[in-house]
Length: 376
Length: 250
Image 1 (tube, one colour):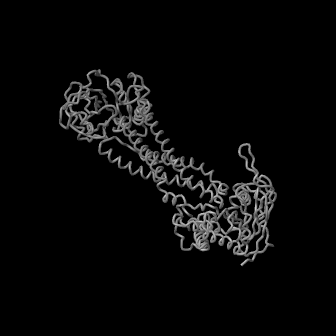
Image 2 (cartoon, rainbow over the protein chains, first blue to last red):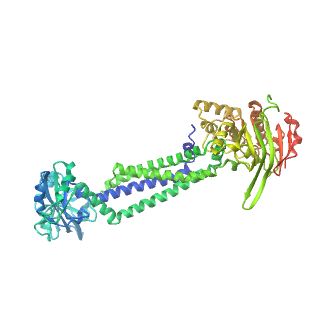
Image 3 (cartoon, rainbow over the protein chains, first blue to last red):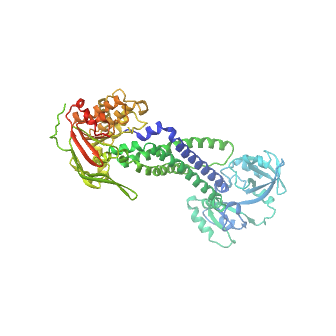
């Protein structure tokens, strides 16, 4: 079989180059956008995904972790009474004002008051046990490496939060947050920094259950009681999703991203289809001759679709290589990029769809390949 | 050389063919009630001034267009009874075409140009290659198999186009002004090849042209004017002595 599509693509590569570049850039933009969205909005739930708690208990209707309202600390007893709950710990969220050692002005920070014990659930995934233990020291805080500049401190420096003196005792990574800077402290330190909180109230309670697979059932069971005032119980997964969806859709950021993705897709499809149409028009007399010789229209359509496929494949190869470079660069600069294999696959499939849709648009041009028009 | 005579069976038959083209409200009749029969093993030439309808007649006889009235029969098959797909299949198996423009794919070598239509016949790769090489050798391009159109002269391109048309070993070969774009020497080579194909393979070669060189080499010349057959002249196989037949051509 003569590989007409491929041979033409190689021989007339200049003609096809715009389409390949269009698909490539569309793919690259989709990949980077997806990675940024997942990375940034994923950071909205870093408190949940960075912890090993199975259940989250908070104020009913809380849309996102950063929007928590205090609940009755007595709920802890209700949790401890359940046979399936193996560990409960409080999590205090404090919106605070940071003043660093260097002149940075006031920086809005989110102080996470967590259990500093070796069994602590909060931030277990991003906080080594030794580092966590240092939080026991009064006024000790831990910050993310990427935030050092904006906080105007280095390891060991002192700063003030809400007028109280704190000291940076450790640096970790994976704590970057959306809309502010995450600062980790012990429950006692956080309690001190939270000037307005009543003593018997806490922002969240997190719990570990005996069998994580049963988390949903346990959450439903615990959510029933009304003895300790209003509170709600979510599984970690539910609460993480809730937080991410809030940021993605209720803030308008997600809509913007989707709009941009649609524009990229549209522009890519227009360029690609026009290029393919031009390629078909350029060979229309040859196609008509083949049809005169009995090569069916279906076979000719296949040639065009094969060209579209190769344009897509080459474009995606380019975008994958470039995306890998950008990812390395982003990693170096602590930009929160996160791309699951499924999201990457969806992006690449979307770009391939772009190429094939363009091919379908170009196929219509083949109706001009009428052999009778060759007879003059 | 000639083994076929005028007693050979009819391969192309047109009866009462009429065709008109409509442009807006203007109807332009092109062919009027044409009836003719064409035999295999001959180079039959349709000649006439431009716009006389000769290309339309070729299109109808080859199944590329349908007549308004009348019927066209090829190899005993009524072309009017075939749908578009069946016509494609018929063309694939039985007909070859050579056009004035050579219509070769710029990306393909001579060998690939010829092999391309063959590959749609479902032949094994080895046979495709063999037949393509033989067809190119037959038109004298055995040494040019690997060259692309940009590296071939006009005459060579038309010979590749002929090889592409005849590699399928079609019973019917249609050619539309095959020599118009060629110089004298190349034109002559192409005429000889077409003639040889008719003679040696017993192929029905139907050619539309107003090239006087072709007229003098044809076995039979049909002169058309204003959509009607004006003249039907069978020539003896004596190409050198038929120069007088150039007259009908405008």
